[in-house]
Length: 262
Length: 219
Ligand SMILES: Nc1ncnc2c1ncn2[C@@H]1O[C@H](COP(=O)(O)OP(=O)(O)OP(=O)(O)O)[C@@H](O)[C@H]1O
Ligand SMILES: [Mg+2]
Image (tube, rainbow over all chains, first blue to last red; front, side, top):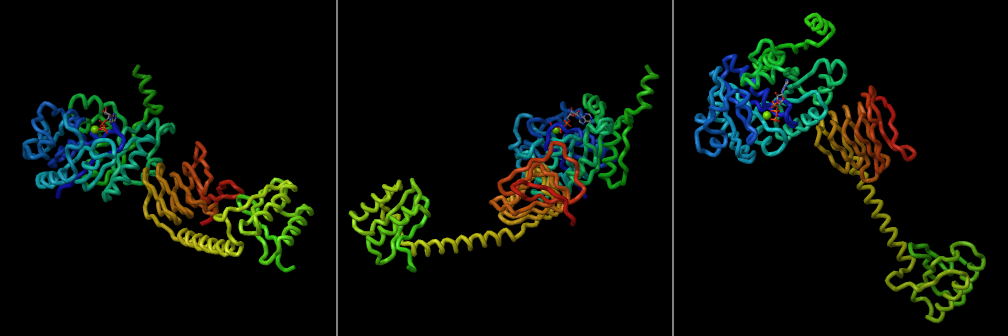
C-alpha cells in the first residue's frame, strides 16, 4: 500500500522543499521505496538539495505531456538507491500541469513506490491545486510566526474545500530561546489557531543550510538537531509513537561552557 | 361639527389641504381664516400649503392663496398627479403599512432561522447570511461572519464578526472566547484592543445606549 503526501504551506520559504528532501532521504534510509515529485515548476530546487541537478534528463512536463514514460524522467539518488526524484522544468510555468495529469501520474507511481512525496509551490493558485489533487495526506509546514501560521490556516481551509481531510502539521525553524523569552509563538499558540495534529517540531538549525550546500540533507547527520527532528517525523509517518524532543537551549550552563572554552 | 371643514395633512413637500364634501367656499375661507388668526396648529409662517386643484374655481383658489400670503405662508395648487383624496391616501398607506409589516415579519422569520456551521472557520473563509449563525468550532483570524441575525460561537472567535448586518440593532454576538479583530453590530463597529488576552468566560456583545458593550455571561 503506497501513500501519497503533499508538502504544502501557503507562505513561501518556510521549509517545504527542505522537509520533502529530508523525509524522502529518511524514508529511503529505512529501506522504503520513495519518489519525490517536484511540482514547483519554474522554481525547481528539490534536485539541488539532493545534489542531483546534473543528472536531470527529462522532467515532469515531459511526462505529463506524454513525451517520455515517467521511468525515463526519474533520477535515482546517488547514495540511497530506493530514492528517486521526478524533477520539474525550470522553463515552463505552473499551468503546464493540471490536477488530472498529476492524479494519472500518481496512480502509475503508486504501483511502484511505497511513498510518493509531492513538493508543493507556495501560494494557493493553480500550482497548489494541482499539487494537492492526488494526495492522501497533506503535511502543512509552518513557522512559529504570525504570518506563516495565518497562511497555514488558510491552506488548511483550502485543503478542506478540496475534501482533503487528512492533514498534519510540521512546525519548522523553532528557536527555543526565543520561545522561552516569549518572542516567538509556542506550540500552544499555534495549536490554538490551527488545532491540527502535529507530527513534527523542527528547530532552526544552521546544519540545514550547510547540508543543503553539500547536496546531502541534514537527516543523515547525527549531530544535527533538525536531523533528529526529521528522523522522528519519519518514524511517526511509519506509525511509531515517538515523543517530541525537548530542545537544547542556549541556557545558563551552555553559556557557561562557552565561557570556559574561550 | 363632526367633520372638519378643512383637513390638513402633513407631507414631505408641505401641508396638503382637503375640504369636507359639500363645504362651501365661504365655510372653507372662514375656517382657514379662523385657524390663521388663532395662530395655532400647523399654519406657521413660511409653511408651504397645497390646495387641491379641483376645489372651487380658480378665482376662489386665488383668494385663498392671498389669504395665506397675508399670514406669511406660501400657497400653491397641487398638480393633479400629486393629488389624492385623503381617504384614498389613507387606504393606500394602510396597505403599504400592512405590506411593510408583512415584510418585516418575513425578515424576522428569516432572522429566526439559523445557519449551523460544524467546523472551524479558517482564514479567508466567509459565512454570509440573512439569518442567525451558530458555529461549533473556532472563527480564526481572517475569517468573516456577516449575519442578518445574531452570532453564537461555541469556540474562540478571532475573526471579523458582523451581527445584525442589515440593520437589526437588537442582534448580539456570543462566543466562548470573544477576541475578534472587529465586532460589528448593525451599523456600529468596535475594534479589539491591540493587545488581547484570552478571555476565560463566555462573553456577549450587544448594543446598549448606542454603543457596543461586551459583558460576561454564564452558559
Ligand atoms: N530548520 C531550518 N533551520 C534553518 N534553516 C532552514 C530550516 N528550514 C529551512 N531553512 C532554510 O530556509 C530556506 C527556505 O527553505 P525551503 O526552500 O525548504 O522553503 P520552501 O518552503 O520550499 O520555499 P519555497 O516556498 O520558495 O518553495 C532555505 O534557505 C533553507 O535552508
Ligand atoms: Mg520549495
